[in-house]
Image 1: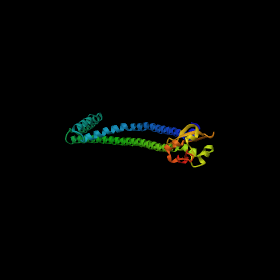
Image 2: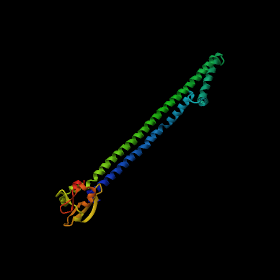
Image 3: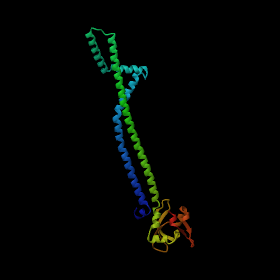
Image 4: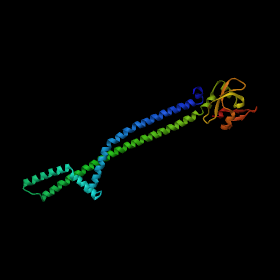
Length: 266
């Protein structure tokens, strides 16, 4: 856009948009790259969470917290477990050997001892289920913490982007006044024309070779032109157009032409 682009803020706004796109892309890239690590961490706990849930359900069923059918099914699973069958066989053989050594048969005290052994094994089984359930609960808690971290990351992304949008909007708004501010601060012929008196002659009837080169932030066109009585080039607005945007900045001079106060156009 060159000189006029910088003069009226077009280049600055272009740079702002470019910087915002890069910033947005970097933020989104960081967020997207982080998500798989969170998901991977959650997945590592998944087997423990699943087995813990199953153990907890079995434990509750054996305690009678479900339906009678569920309790019966859970007990069948326990009794058909090869480990239970093997332990039962070992305990039975050990007890029979003791009875034989004493010349006793299975009954009375022996039956009571067998029942006690069975209850101990059953209690151990419940304890193992309870422990597995606790492990699953811990894994679920870890997963919940990871998911909360994902939520915090998403919230952080949102708040950062919102802050950037606010800053971007403010910067863009400031850039809209660059053209007028630059016109007011320019030296040379432009500065002399506009600083000589509060109101500068800006009537379109006094100008020639008019070329539009930009606009203010609120849409007032800005032109490059020459006055009809000279060859110097100037940059400014047309008073007739300024009336529609900033009527308080326009006045009628004694010679019947419109003049503009540029400081009121900002």
